[in-house]
Image (cartoon, rainbow, N blue to C red; front, side):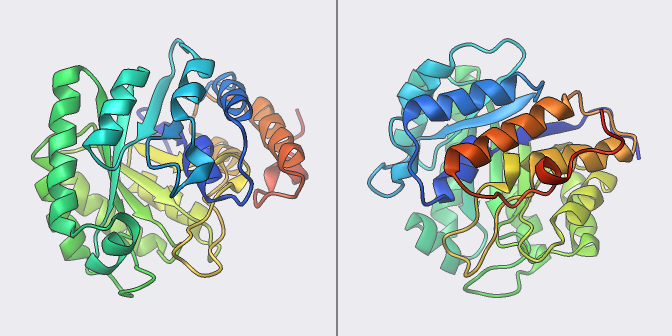
Length: 298
Protein backbone atom coordinates (compact mmCIF):
# COMPACT_ATOMS: atom_id res chain seq x y z
CA UNK A 1 0.00 0.00 0.00
CA UNK A 2 1.47 3.36 -1.05
CA UNK A 3 -0.07 6.77 -0.38
CA UNK A 4 2.14 9.79 -0.95
CA UNK A 5 -0.46 12.46 -0.18
CA UNK A 6 -1.79 11.16 3.13
CA UNK A 7 -2.37 13.65 5.95
CA UNK A 8 -2.93 12.33 9.46
CA UNK A 9 -4.97 14.83 11.44
CA UNK A 10 -4.56 14.44 15.19
CA UNK A 11 -7.90 15.12 16.88
CA UNK A 12 -7.07 14.18 20.48
CA UNK A 13 -6.80 17.72 21.90
CA UNK A 14 -10.26 18.52 20.56
CA UNK A 15 -12.48 15.57 19.65
CA UNK A 16 -10.68 13.33 22.12
CA UNK A 17 -10.65 15.54 25.20
CA UNK A 18 -14.11 17.02 24.68
CA UNK A 19 -15.61 13.59 25.31
CA UNK A 20 -13.48 12.79 28.35
CA UNK A 21 -14.98 13.16 31.84
CA UNK A 22 -11.89 15.06 33.05
CA UNK A 23 -11.67 18.79 32.36
CA UNK A 24 -8.02 19.67 31.74
CA UNK A 25 -6.76 23.22 32.14
CA UNK A 26 -5.66 25.26 29.14
CA UNK A 27 -1.97 24.85 29.94
CA UNK A 28 -2.13 21.06 29.95
CA UNK A 29 -4.11 21.01 26.71
CA UNK A 30 -1.56 23.30 25.06
CA UNK A 31 1.27 21.09 26.31
CA UNK A 32 -0.44 18.11 24.69
CA UNK A 33 -0.57 19.95 21.36
CA UNK A 34 3.09 20.95 21.59
CA UNK A 35 4.17 17.38 22.38
CA UNK A 36 2.12 16.05 19.46
CA UNK A 37 3.53 18.67 17.11
CA UNK A 38 7.05 17.58 18.04
CA UNK A 39 6.34 14.09 16.65
CA UNK A 40 6.00 15.43 13.12
CA UNK A 41 2.23 15.21 12.80
CA UNK A 42 1.18 17.51 9.94
CA UNK A 43 -2.20 18.65 11.33
CA UNK A 44 -3.72 18.89 14.81
CA UNK A 45 -7.18 19.90 16.02
CA UNK A 46 -6.19 22.34 18.75
CA UNK A 47 -9.53 23.47 20.16
CA UNK A 48 -13.27 23.77 19.69
CA UNK A 49 -14.91 27.19 19.58
CA UNK A 50 -18.24 26.23 21.10
CA UNK A 51 -20.24 27.34 24.12
CA UNK A 52 -18.17 26.28 27.19
CA UNK A 53 -21.40 25.80 29.14
CA UNK A 54 -22.24 22.91 26.81
CA UNK A 55 -18.69 21.58 26.44
CA UNK A 56 -16.68 22.63 29.50
CA UNK A 57 -13.73 20.50 28.34
CA UNK A 58 -13.23 23.02 25.50
CA UNK A 59 -13.40 26.21 27.60
CA UNK A 60 -10.64 28.82 27.17
CA UNK A 61 -9.96 27.86 23.56
CA UNK A 62 -8.20 31.16 22.87
CA UNK A 63 -5.84 30.59 25.79
CA UNK A 64 -4.93 27.16 24.42
CA UNK A 65 -4.17 28.57 20.97
CA UNK A 66 -2.07 31.38 22.41
CA UNK A 67 -0.10 28.95 24.58
CA UNK A 68 0.54 26.64 21.62
CA UNK A 69 1.88 29.53 19.56
CA UNK A 70 3.18 29.33 16.03
CA UNK A 71 4.24 25.85 14.96
CA UNK A 72 6.14 25.92 11.64
CA UNK A 73 4.99 23.20 9.28
CA UNK A 74 1.92 22.37 11.37
CA UNK A 75 -1.68 23.03 10.35
CA UNK A 76 -3.42 24.15 13.54
CA UNK A 77 -7.13 23.42 13.13
CA UNK A 78 -10.18 24.22 15.21
CA UNK A 79 -13.84 23.26 15.20
CA UNK A 80 -16.57 25.86 14.66
CA UNK A 81 -20.27 25.01 14.44
CA UNK A 82 -21.59 28.48 13.60
CA UNK A 83 -20.42 31.91 12.48
CA UNK A 84 -19.79 33.04 16.07
CA UNK A 85 -17.42 30.15 16.56
CA UNK A 86 -15.80 30.89 13.22
CA UNK A 87 -15.19 34.53 14.17
CA UNK A 88 -13.50 33.40 17.40
CA UNK A 89 -11.37 30.90 15.50
CA UNK A 90 -10.20 33.54 13.02
CA UNK A 91 -9.41 36.01 15.80
CA UNK A 92 -7.38 33.33 17.60
CA UNK A 93 -5.20 32.92 14.52
CA UNK A 94 -5.68 29.27 13.59
CA UNK A 95 -4.85 27.89 10.14
CA UNK A 96 -7.89 25.74 9.41
CA UNK A 97 -11.56 25.68 10.29
CA UNK A 98 -13.38 22.37 10.58
CA UNK A 99 -17.17 22.36 10.47
CA UNK A 100 -19.18 19.24 11.37
CA UNK A 101 -22.82 18.34 10.98
CA UNK A 102 -24.88 15.17 11.13
CA UNK A 103 -26.31 13.66 7.97
CA UNK A 104 -29.53 12.60 9.76
CA UNK A 105 -32.14 15.00 11.08
CA UNK A 106 -32.35 13.15 14.39
CA UNK A 107 -28.64 13.33 15.17
CA UNK A 108 -28.15 16.86 13.90
CA UNK A 109 -31.04 18.15 15.98
CA UNK A 110 -29.69 16.54 19.15
CA UNK A 111 -26.10 17.54 18.50
CA UNK A 112 -26.50 21.02 17.03
CA UNK A 113 -30.12 22.02 17.45
CA UNK A 114 -30.53 22.58 13.71
CA UNK A 115 -31.94 20.89 10.64
CA UNK A 116 -29.58 19.27 8.17
CA UNK A 117 -30.43 21.98 5.63
CA UNK A 118 -29.58 24.72 8.11
CA UNK A 119 -26.26 23.12 8.97
CA UNK A 120 -25.44 22.48 5.33
CA UNK A 121 -26.03 26.16 4.56
CA UNK A 122 -23.76 27.11 7.47
CA UNK A 123 -21.07 24.73 6.21
CA UNK A 124 -21.15 26.35 2.78
CA UNK A 125 -21.07 29.87 4.26
CA UNK A 126 -18.15 29.15 6.57
CA UNK A 127 -16.21 27.36 3.82
CA UNK A 128 -16.60 30.34 1.52
CA UNK A 129 -15.64 32.78 4.27
CA UNK A 130 -12.57 30.70 5.05
CA UNK A 131 -11.40 30.89 1.46
CA UNK A 132 -11.87 34.67 1.47
CA UNK A 133 -9.97 34.93 4.78
CA UNK A 134 -7.10 32.75 3.54
CA UNK A 135 -7.86 29.80 5.85
CA UNK A 136 -7.96 26.12 5.04
CA UNK A 137 -11.27 24.34 5.58
CA UNK A 138 -12.72 20.88 6.06
CA UNK A 139 -16.34 19.77 6.42
CA UNK A 140 -17.07 16.67 8.48
CA UNK A 141 -20.19 14.63 7.70
CA UNK A 142 -21.02 12.99 11.03
CA UNK A 143 -22.81 9.62 11.42
CA UNK A 144 -22.10 8.97 7.74
CA UNK A 145 -22.20 5.18 8.22
CA UNK A 146 -24.80 4.81 10.94
CA UNK A 147 -26.80 6.92 13.40
CA UNK A 148 -27.48 6.13 17.08
CA UNK A 149 -31.02 7.48 16.67
CA UNK A 150 -32.06 6.83 13.07
CA UNK A 151 -30.14 3.60 12.59
CA UNK A 152 -28.83 2.69 9.12
CA UNK A 153 -27.87 5.62 6.90
CA UNK A 154 -28.44 5.63 3.14
CA UNK A 155 -25.05 6.14 1.44
CA UNK A 156 -26.86 7.85 -1.41
CA UNK A 157 -28.05 10.52 1.00
CA UNK A 158 -24.51 11.03 2.29
CA UNK A 159 -23.17 11.32 -1.25
CA UNK A 160 -25.88 13.84 -2.10
CA UNK A 161 -24.99 16.03 0.89
CA UNK A 162 -21.29 15.69 0.07
CA UNK A 163 -21.93 16.85 -3.49
CA UNK A 164 -23.83 19.91 -2.28
CA UNK A 165 -21.17 20.88 0.24
CA UNK A 166 -18.52 20.16 -2.37
CA UNK A 167 -19.77 23.03 -4.52
CA UNK A 168 -18.19 25.37 -1.94
CA UNK A 169 -14.85 23.61 -2.52
CA UNK A 170 -13.72 22.85 1.03
CA UNK A 171 -10.19 21.56 1.42
CA UNK A 172 -11.58 18.16 2.42
CA UNK A 173 -14.84 16.34 3.01
CA UNK A 174 -14.40 14.01 5.97
CA UNK A 175 -16.72 11.00 6.31
CA UNK A 176 -17.14 10.25 10.00
CA UNK A 177 -18.10 6.90 11.50
CA UNK A 178 -19.10 8.72 14.66
CA UNK A 179 -20.39 5.70 16.57
CA UNK A 180 -18.10 3.02 15.14
CA UNK A 181 -20.50 0.87 13.10
CA UNK A 182 -18.91 0.91 9.63
CA UNK A 183 -17.41 -2.02 7.75
CA UNK A 184 -14.48 -1.89 5.31
CA UNK A 185 -16.65 -2.58 2.26
CA UNK A 186 -19.07 0.22 3.16
CA UNK A 187 -16.13 2.56 3.71
CA UNK A 188 -14.54 1.69 0.37
CA UNK A 189 -17.79 2.25 -1.47
CA UNK A 190 -18.65 5.60 0.10
CA UNK A 191 -15.11 7.01 -0.02
CA UNK A 192 -14.81 6.10 -3.70
CA UNK A 193 -18.22 7.60 -4.41
CA UNK A 194 -17.36 10.91 -2.74
CA UNK A 195 -13.84 10.98 -4.20
CA UNK A 196 -15.53 10.76 -7.60
CA UNK A 197 -16.82 14.29 -7.00
CA UNK A 198 -13.26 15.54 -7.43
CA UNK A 199 -12.75 16.55 -3.79
CA UNK A 200 -10.24 15.47 -1.17
CA UNK A 201 -11.89 12.84 1.03
CA UNK A 202 -11.06 12.09 4.64
CA UNK A 203 -12.06 9.38 7.08
CA UNK A 204 -12.81 9.72 10.79
CA UNK A 205 -13.23 6.34 12.49
CA UNK A 206 -14.09 5.12 15.96
CA UNK A 207 -13.08 1.68 17.17
CA UNK A 208 -16.28 0.97 19.08
CA UNK A 209 -16.78 -2.41 17.43
CA UNK A 210 -13.10 -3.10 16.73
CA UNK A 211 -13.30 -2.25 13.01
CA UNK A 212 -11.79 1.24 13.13
CA UNK A 213 -8.32 0.37 11.87
CA UNK A 214 -9.59 -1.90 9.10
CA UNK A 215 -11.90 0.92 8.05
CA UNK A 216 -9.04 3.43 8.00
CA UNK A 217 -6.98 1.19 5.73
CA UNK A 218 -10.01 0.60 3.52
CA UNK A 219 -10.54 4.36 3.22
CA UNK A 220 -6.92 4.82 2.19
CA UNK A 221 -7.22 2.10 -0.44
CA UNK A 222 -10.33 3.81 -1.84
CA UNK A 223 -8.62 7.16 -2.24
CA UNK A 224 -8.89 9.00 1.09
CA UNK A 225 -6.14 11.57 1.60
CA UNK A 226 -6.94 12.52 5.22
CA UNK A 227 -7.25 10.19 8.20
CA UNK A 228 -8.27 11.48 11.63
CA UNK A 229 -6.97 9.78 14.75
CA UNK A 230 -6.65 10.54 18.46
CA UNK A 231 -3.58 9.92 20.59
CA UNK A 232 -4.13 6.97 22.92
CA UNK A 233 -7.61 6.49 21.44
CA UNK A 234 -9.00 9.38 23.48
CA UNK A 235 -12.64 10.26 23.09
CA UNK A 236 -15.95 8.69 22.28
CA UNK A 237 -19.39 9.93 21.38
CA UNK A 238 -21.76 11.24 24.09
CA UNK A 239 -24.74 10.38 21.87
CA UNK A 240 -23.76 6.73 21.35
CA UNK A 241 -24.25 4.30 24.25
CA UNK A 242 -21.05 2.48 25.27
CA UNK A 243 -19.05 4.16 22.50
CA UNK A 244 -15.30 3.89 22.88
CA UNK A 245 -12.87 6.40 21.45
CA UNK A 246 -11.39 7.30 18.14
CA UNK A 247 -8.77 5.06 16.60
CA UNK A 248 -5.45 5.69 18.34
CA UNK A 249 -2.97 7.74 16.32
CA UNK A 250 0.06 5.68 17.32
CA UNK A 251 -1.73 2.42 16.49
CA UNK A 252 -2.73 3.80 13.09
CA UNK A 253 0.80 5.02 12.35
CA UNK A 254 2.20 1.60 13.26
CA UNK A 255 -0.27 -0.14 10.92
CA UNK A 256 0.52 2.27 8.10
CA UNK A 257 4.27 1.86 8.55
CA UNK A 258 3.91 -1.92 8.41
CA UNK A 259 1.96 -1.44 5.17
CA UNK A 260 4.80 0.59 3.70
CA UNK A 261 3.23 4.03 4.05
CA UNK A 262 5.62 6.80 5.05
CA UNK A 263 3.65 8.97 7.48
CA UNK A 264 6.48 11.31 8.42
CA UNK A 265 5.61 10.79 12.09
CA UNK A 266 8.17 9.74 14.70
CA UNK A 267 6.41 6.73 16.17
CA UNK A 268 8.46 6.36 19.35
CA UNK A 269 7.81 10.01 20.23
CA UNK A 270 4.10 9.52 19.59
CA UNK A 271 4.00 6.46 21.84
CA UNK A 272 5.62 8.57 24.55
CA UNK A 273 2.89 11.20 24.22
CA UNK A 274 0.21 8.52 24.64
CA UNK A 275 1.94 7.25 27.77
CA UNK A 276 2.16 10.80 29.13
CA UNK A 277 -1.53 11.33 28.44
CA UNK A 278 -2.43 8.13 30.28
CA UNK A 279 -0.37 9.29 33.25
CA UNK A 280 -1.96 12.75 33.13
CA UNK A 281 -5.48 11.30 33.15
CA UNK A 282 -4.56 8.64 35.67
CA UNK A 283 -5.99 5.70 33.77
CA UNK A 284 -5.35 3.26 30.95
CA UNK A 285 -6.29 4.53 27.51
CA UNK A 286 -7.97 2.58 24.70
CA UNK A 287 -4.87 2.48 22.49
CA UNK A 288 -2.82 -0.70 22.37
CA UNK A 289 0.61 0.25 21.05
CA UNK A 290 1.71 2.50 23.90
CA UNK A 291 1.40 -0.55 26.17
CA UNK A 292 2.56 -3.30 23.79
CA UNK A 293 5.40 -1.35 22.14
CA UNK A 294 6.33 -1.28 18.48
CA UNK A 295 7.77 -4.23 16.57
CA UNK A 296 10.59 -4.63 15.99
CA UNK A 297 11.69 -2.68 19.03
CA UNK A 298 13.52 0.55 18.27
